[in-house]
Image 1 (cartoon, helix red, strand yellow):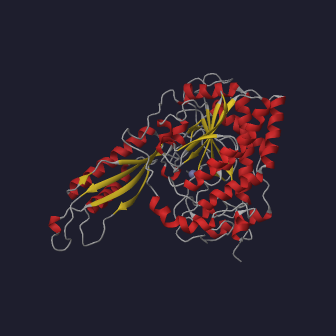
Image 2 (cartoon, protein in one colour):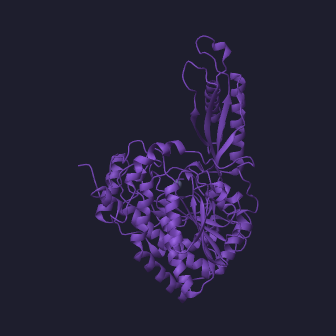
Image 3 (tube, helix red, strand yellow):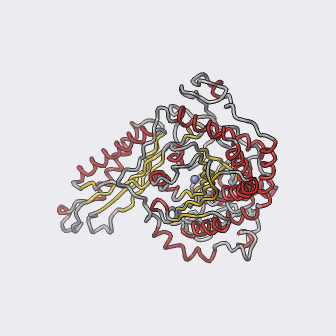
Length: 544
Ligand SMILES: [Zn+2]
């Protein structure tokens, strides 16, 4: 997903809003009045101060995790090294781990503690194809040409959560505070391939609050309908008949024709879709060689919209165009396959307000002159304004009105967010102005910029955990919002159908091609302090 800063505000629809505000549905100003949540007691303030100091003292531990995952650079559903490493680390730190959950080999749930509340901390772990890039080098310079890499920054979010969780675990043990902490990975987020299956498998059934983290350019959090979209990812496969393409073309039925006609048809249909629609496709199978009429062909679509009904409508339009293409080419449309799905995101107000208060206490990291010089050099290289790194935390993001939301990226955290109170904490581990899903988005992701951003995020997360385990009022308010505002009229229905299964074979071939070349470059923390040191990179490397 891409994090979009939200500047629009809207009125919360009717419904009971907990706290001082009473019945919502008033004007924008009323909707912005904070909920009546309890302030920090002296004990809570003390524990938060201790938690922040503990996170700071663990910054090398966090940095190693960031660098390790960066060096693995694994694609969705193939995060085997990443998963193995995180599971071992969590076990070593006293978590019990269930592996291979929801039928996904690289997924796991790590648990520590007892009783309520149950807090689930998640973050994505997968990379981007062809985004291999040397960190700390401000121009295109792949570690391995063509290989995948962390061109989205998903190597950093687990470190935020795990560092905060370990700090809280120590405090809870000593203070005998009840509660359960769960750690889970966003597997194959770039395929929006896992989280709906986590929900279907019941992995979050007893969870009170889900805290998600995502790399960003700032420390920020939001509530209500998020920016961006939800989506359904569908594979359309056609069956034709092969024939000698020159000797007997009239005997053949080209499945590739069906794919091309579907794409042409869809590109005409696009003009008549709502402005908030986004869609894109890649051809997965276009036949074998020109002298054989392609008997099979397939095309993979993402249909994105800002509401669940909008996604369903767009998907139905896609199905219709596919049927038309089959009719025109005299081929057969095979049963479609859903390869991924994501509900549009909606975040919890009470948890966001608590998180925002902690963001303000933590503030932005102190960037060095090298960090700023590197950021400006990357921005110069990309031809975007040379603004450097953000130095001020974001304000509390207000709800985006679906009626004026013109779309954007997605994250299957949306599915979690419609099943329990959830927020996404954005932490400042990357450079503003990058294109997203690109090698440039990996440049900072194993440098002090990423490391400092993670430590700042972990401080916020640790403080929010203190709030959640010691202020039951926050959890009550969170569920009140969830039940009486968020899901009052819109209930969750999965986009995945009963016959759909996790697409765990995806990316297998790409990783098989590159893994052995990448292996010698895995980070070795027994020999080097940082990945930059291992690679011999004198950060920041800037074009003269
Ligand atoms: Zn992402």
